[in-house]
Amino acid sequence: MQTARTDFIELPATDIAATTAFYESVFGWSLTAFGPTYACTMTGDVDIGLQADVAERTAAPLPAIRVADLEAALAAVSAAGGAITHPIFAFPGGRRFHFRDPSGNELAIHTAA
Image (tube, rainbow, N blue to C red):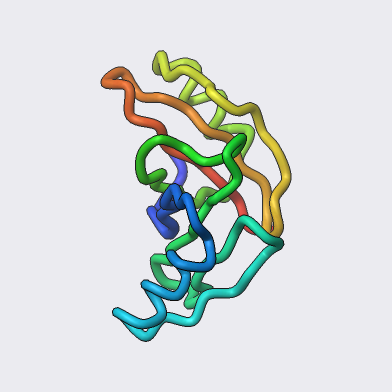
């Protein structure tokens, strides 16, 4: 088993500008825009992403777990009975996939670029 750590939580957003402004105002966070529908903090600790693309956003917060070997994590999730909801894909900063655990929670596993 490889070392893994939750280091990112992606939140669904319906209005990226208003949601970004909210978190910047309330917590003093600095969010970086990655196009018109995505922004995130980039602290290197546990970062927060805001996903406003209707086709990409999840219904609930999406925890993301960083691993060293993405393919091994995919194999482990599949072998343990996890349901892959989005196969491995590239995003700014790395690659990831999404899955559902036996209770229906959706999570992501990613590697840095």
